[in-house]
Length: 362
Image (cartoon, rainbow, N blue to C red):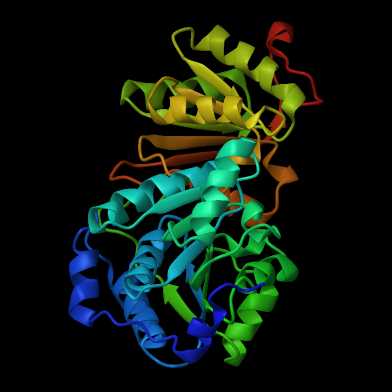
């Protein structure tokens, strides 16, 4: 049952003025880039017409796509509708919910989080709030597409990292109402989505302008060795920064942590991977965000959207195991501040000393 769907059918036009949107955007922590301004204008024209928006927002990692989406969400809620944002991981969903709540709460707008790892009681409370129009924005993972989710007045569906979802998955959220406005975001859109945009079947906004005071990420291909790793970590720690260390196999995380402790004794290492419980993983990631750890040693759970401006070095072990899209996404976890950032792509493991050797099964 599509609750409140008739309202979306009758009139999809929003009611806020361009000046009101600009006033909201002025509250952002950074001034909008030219690319962001054009994207906001594109979306403004879409949502103030009687036609349904179906737009791809394409921009490099760290280009500020979420702030553009925030402007669209704010306009949607101000017009009296609900908005939904779909993210591929619980960590990213929680980060989006926290960041968007800071922007929307001063306007009395209510943000809810819905993930598969929630306890049953919290889930029931959230579902009731969505159904009764007591949640203006719902940020969630695949749980947003489940049958029990009923929106009162869904007017906008935003899909982050759209290349992480299939066609049916993306469509399942949009089907929660009668053709709500749709905004999909990605740094690396799948070929089908990109082709639709190039053909004109879907509108597209491209953000090419990097935020101010950003430096290009220095990317180096290196042989995995204790010397390379220790130098990279010591340099980042010397300037008060933090390090992402990505290893694609869970079995290799503990040996790498031992190596780091051996060659950088004062380094605080947090380990995270997908087989941990959501509570444990959230504790580790939040600890890293709060600077409880110098290094976050993990699998590819950091690939999608985690934004920690103090982390400006990333080491990717066995980089040849990943595709270019994966490497591009992971490299985009750093370089989100005014500091020079570094990405080390480690292709092979070698060591001169036998006691330094880590199993080839990493």
